[in-house]
Amino acid sequence: MLRSANYAMIATAAAVGAAARLTVSETLEPGWFATSVVNLVACLAAGFIMRSSVSSEPLRRVVTAGLLGGLSTFATLSEDLRRLASTGDTGPLILAFAAAAIGCPAVFLIARGRPRG
Image (cartoon, rainbow, N blue to C red; front, side, top):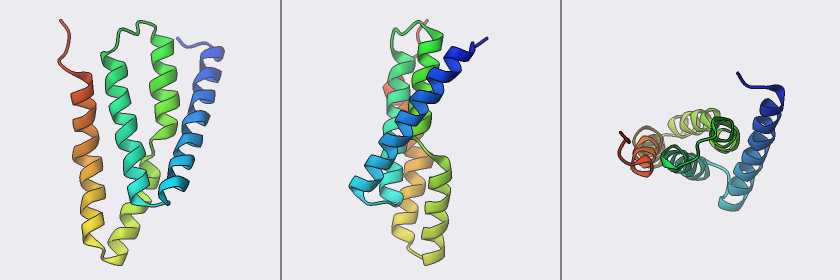
């Protein structure tokens, strides 16, 4: 069971992740490309964290649910896909969808590596 201090740490890490997402979005120009970049980076990092020797479950949750959860964004991805579909811009629509549906799971699995045991 998580204690309230752990929730505060997760919330703080999520705020840092969200601020990082905003920074990336403003640097790359808001839109599907920036959203895809942060989601791919978050999935890659999550894979590395799951593979790492971090044995502390609270720390793992702070990084994955907090920091990386704040960094990645499904809601913005959904809006980006809706916007691209409504404009008929099929190239970026396909790329953004593929990055989410194929790229994110792929980079996570590559980073995680083979299961131990």
